[in-house]
Image 1: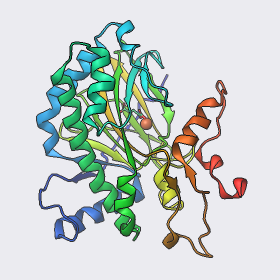
Image 2: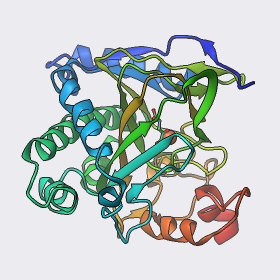
Image 3: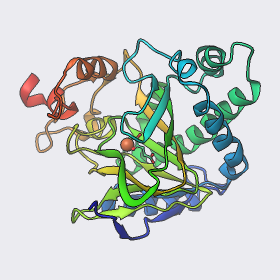
Image 4: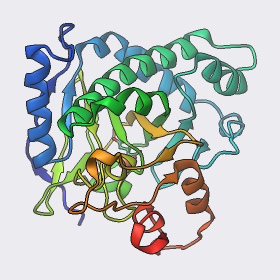
Length: 325
Ligand SMILES: O=C(O)CCC(=O)C(=O)O
Ligand SMILES: [Fe+2]
């Protein structure tokens, strides 16, 4: 039987305060909390009260879109890797990945109009507002991390080169009390991920001792993580920080009769931007661990490798300085 996970509360950090500005005492406190959380778990629960007013609309929109007939959902395709509609990747999960989700035109013209040729203004508006809100939080988190590493002078450039991907996920209820895998254990490949879910829990993260911890976020919280390493290699942020962040391995395990919805905001680097550790983090004692690379080129390369059940070359190998130098 599937291990059903340990109860432990992730650190909760409150980002709701409108006075949370760089240099303020509130900022310094949050920075301290983020640093502690990253050392212990590489992730945390980010309270952001502003999201509560969007909650019903977000999960309503997700129900609406996944309830569309399969032949309609399948119309949502993309020529970029990992974007588009993905029906039942695991028995339970189906998902939609939206590229450049900060662009309202992109959501409206590429997604909404494809699925609803006569339009669906409330659907577009909900996704646009959600992405706007979640990306505000993500920028705050990334700025804090850059400050922790003393490389805040690069934050604007880093933020300007961001592609925000919005992923909508539906985990069908397994209709059994046996814990069932919804998403296999993995590591995200991007910089910072924010997850927002309905009332059905299921996310588990692996702690330092290898135990799976059940994550049970409150309705006003995102799970925030500059995720992680192991199977796929370090995320962009780790490469950028020259190895300076550790990893969170995670998976989704569901049970019972309720459908789980989650929305993920994945910050990643745009194609054309060279991901490269800043010189401040590289010296004789700390040589460059990863060769500069283009994230979209990596994704394309990653997808061309067909290795059923086997490991594919992850980011670590792809841009390991030792191998490519
Ligand atoms: O549904 C979730 O909460 C997690 C999904 C996830 O880990 C992913 O899409 O990378
Ligand atoms: Fe993930």
